[in-house]
Amino acid sequence: MTDELKKEFTLRITQANPISMITILYEIALAYLEEAAEAKQSDDREKFVLAIHHGQDCIRELQSSLNLSYEPAPVLYRLYIQMHRKLAQAITGFSLEACEKVQSQLEQLRDAYIQLEKTGSWDSVMVNTQQVYAGLTYGRTSLVESLEQGDNRGFLA
Image 1 (tube, rainbow, N blue to C red):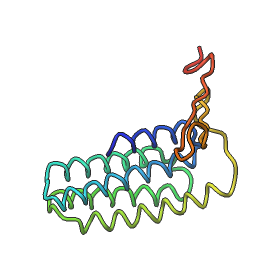
Image 2: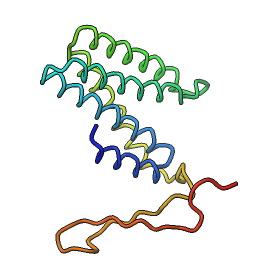
Image 3: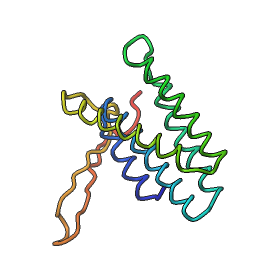
Image 4: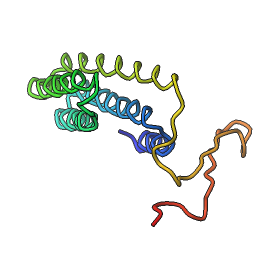
């Protein structure tokens, strides 16, 4: 994953609500599976395995964040286990077939959570973060992001 993409995800996480955090995790997992597909195309087994492992880590994080006492968490839990196994099969077979199935499932879940984001308004998960403003502020053709620095940034004691 490129540094630019990491910065974008980091910025989105600082501004995210609980539902969009899940959406971001899906998108990170999808980015790693795309990276695995690129590694497979260039026949780089080491990068392929590393990208799949990162994707599995994202799925593991989604799995551990489930509250199994509410529906549809038990179903999602089993689906995440199945995805993890398919990605393990992709590693052992150095194959994209299983990756593509997992990618399709992740895209469907991401799209469902995007629709869920639209149904309500939630507060940000992180408080006391920098406000980010984007716009054509310093140049005619370039988009510039400005950060608003506060006096009290970070953890509050």
